Amino acid sequence: MKKQLSRSLLMLSSLILAACSSQLTVKGQFPSPLTTAMPLHGAAYYSPELISHSYAEDDEDRVKWNIQTGAAQQEFFDSLLPALFQQWAGHSPDPEGEAFKLPGVDIIVKPTLSDFQYSLPRETRSKIFEVWIKYNMQLYQNDGQLLADWFITAYGKTPSGFMQSDEAAMNEAIIVALRDLGANLTVNFSRVPELQDWMGKRDSSVQQQSADRGGVQNETP
Amino acid sequence: MRHPSYLLACLYLLSLSACTSVTIDEYQRAEASLASGDRIVLLGRRHSPDYETEPDLINCVGKVISANQSGISVIPEKQFVDELYPWFEPRMAPMRPERLEYLMKQPQVREKIEDLKLRYVIWIDGSTQQTGSAGSVGCAVGPGGGGCFGFGTWDDKSDYEAEVWDYQKQDLVAKVSADAKGTSYMPALVVPIPLLARVQSNACKGLGAQLREIFVPDSSANAGA
Image 1 (cartoon, rainbow over the protein chains, first blue to last red):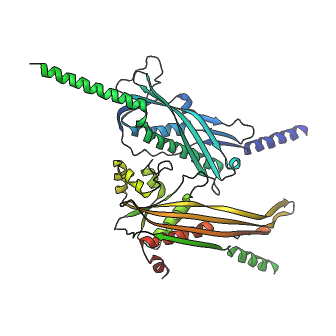
Image 2 (cartoon, rainbow over the protein chains, first blue to last red; image 1 turned 120 degrees about the vertical axis):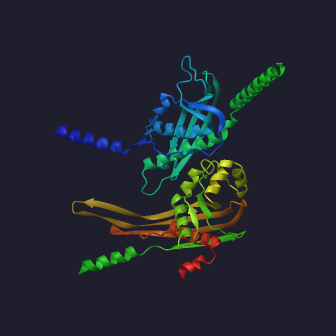
C-alpha cells in the first residue's frame, strides 16, 4: 500500500514538473537576402558548439525551457552568407586548426553565439515573447590569420496568440531575432573597417602588380 | 417541456453578440489610381516594443479590400517581406515615403518590386488591447456533475492607422484611422455563454472598406447594391 502511494506521488510530481517545463527545437525558413554581393570568395566555419547549441534554463524562479537552436542557426547562416559573396565555397575546416590553408578562398566567416536571453509574457506583464541574441563574428584569411572580430546583436518578439502554444510563440520570436541578425549583417558586413582596409590593400596591391607587369612589358624592346 | 424552452433560451443567448462602436477617419492628399496589373501590399508595423500589429488583422483588411470583385490585387504580406528580405524587416523598413527612394537605389530591390508590379504600399500600425475587466466565473466538477456560475465582462479597444504610400511618386496618398470599442459579457449559469464584442473584426471591416474606397470610389455603394 505504501509502495503504491509513493509510486503515485512520484508520478504526480513528475507530471507537475513536466507541466512546468518546455522543450523546443527551433524550426523555420530563412529567405536569402537581396543585396549586392562582395567581390570575394567566401566560406563558413561552424563550430560543434554552434551546430549543437541548446539553451537550458537553470534559474529556479523561471519556467524550465530547453531550447535547441543549433540546426536553425546553421540553416540561417547557410541562407544568408552565400548571398554576401560573389563566390561561395561552402563549409570550411576550422581556420584556427593546425596548418590551416584554404587556397582560392579569400575569407572564412566564423559565427559564435555568445549570449542568448529571453523574456516571457508573465515576466514582463505584456503579451509578448522577446528574444535577444548576441554573436561574435570572426573573419579569417585563407591562411588562418584573424582579420576581423566584432559583436553583433539582434532582437525578436512575437505576441502570444489565442490558441497558440508558448513553444510556437518562442519559436517565432527566435526566428524573428535571426531574421533581424540577417538584416544587420546584410547592411553592415561590407562596412566592417578591418575588412574594408584589407580589401583596399588587396586591390591596390593587385593594381600595383598589373602596373609593374605593364611597365616591364613596355620596357621590353 | 422545460427542456425545449431552456434550449431555446440558450440558442437565443448564443445568437446574441455584444455591441461594438467603430469610428473611421480619413485624410486624402492625392488621388490614387491602379492601372491594369498594378498591385498593392499591406504591411503591419512591428517596430514598437509594446505591441505588434497583428498579422491576422493585415490578412483580414487585405481580404476586405479585394472582396466583392473590387479588382484590387493584394500581394500577401509574408510573400512580399520574404521576397524583399531584409528591406522590410522592422529594423530596416522605411518609416517615411521619401525613404522609398533609398530602396529604389538598390538595383535588386527595384527589380523585385517591378516584378511584383507594386504601385501602393499600405502600412498599418496599431493593435487591439483589452482595456479592463470585471466580475468572475467559477467552475466546479463533482461526482454528480459540474458547472460554471458567475458573470464576467471585459472591454476591448482597437486603434489602427493606415498610411497609403505611392511607390512610384514616393509620396503619401492618404491616411485612414479606425478606432473600435466594445464590451464582451460572459454570463455562466451551469454553461458559460460568451457574448463577444467583435472589436478587431469590426475595425478590420471598417478600415478595409475605407481603404477600398480610396482605390475604387463608390465601391461600398456598389457592394451594397
